[in-house]
Length: 262
Image 1 (cartoon, rainbow, N blue to C red):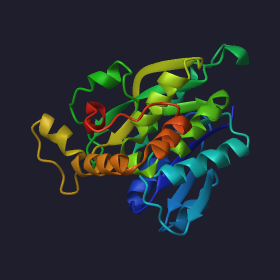
Image 2 (image 1 turned 90 degrees about the vertical axis):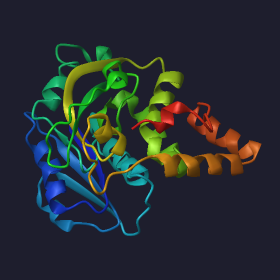
Image 3 (image 1 turned 60 degrees about the vertical axis):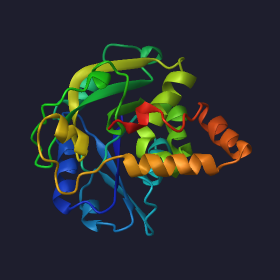
Image 4 (image 1 turned 30 degrees about the horizontal axis):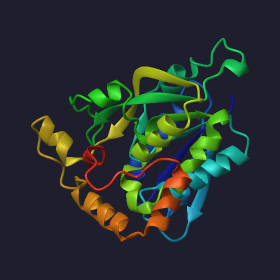
């Protein structure tokens, strides 16, 4: 089974990218990595034999959705059986693919899951775990971008990631999870309980929840939510209908509580 991880990147440090790439190389099965530069390419990445590298010379600045989608297209057009998104500041536990691939083990291909949903651990920028509860994720009511593991029978759905408007790209994983849940109940989904994705957290709210001072470069969603609301209100009914028909789900505005969570 050919496996690749798709990693968009922009202005991450070499140290951060090396940590991400090393976690992919450390898996017990061969895993390739498709890096997609959203401007500011780092060509040293091409030195590794398991790496493909796509370069967008001009930055799209849409939360990684354009480079992520291009990496997905390259992966599905070059014969991979399994594709996973992994943001550049995140990394995998050494047993990540041992855990996710066990859902395929011992089964005939017609019984394979279409995708596996993994879980994440929030970590500080230095990689140490943050002791924060994630009840919605424990119940698989939310799945982070870096926790979708697609088998090739789900690529037709994964490509819908490219249809998420950039104005709501800050909540792209929630939008896609809604697409998956509401429009594609036919997919066979395997749920992986082990938390094998390490998510570098820069959300102010998470640090405040555990009584810590947020990092200097931490973020909150308020400005993004406000901008998204203004964008949605600016659209006429036809434009709104086009967005919703492409995704196959209603866009809930303006005060949907889901979009204010990390």
